[in-house]
Image (tube, rainbow, N blue to C red):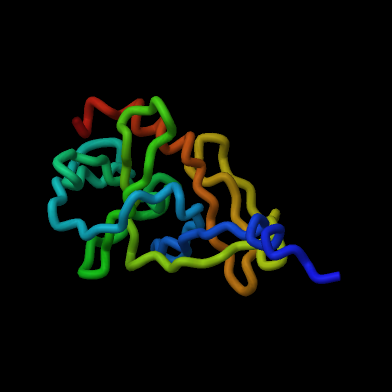
Length: 161
């Protein structure tokens, strides 16, 4: 008996691999509103160190964060390939959008249970913006903790507004 094609597609999730310095994030495609340049960037030079600044998008100032800096690594350099990956915030959260600094264009991938598995080689602190790392064929992208990132932004809202 042939497999039901609808059951195969229900097990796949379109995701984006977002390039960071030395690694990548993996996020469901539906979480991302747009990928844009950082041309309308207003840098912030105060704490928290992970808050790069704000980027203009659709007439709003969207907070731009560095996942690397939020994980305790050095702030990556802004370069010609840097992008802002605009995320939809969870319903009812302020701001309604936030951006993650990317070191290039994200790559669209289809993820299914056959190509990924949990990687338990490293644990993350409770206050980390990373939930875990997964093994996907021959790479290990990070799974961000969107709820944690949104809470961090709410706690620091007076600095970027």
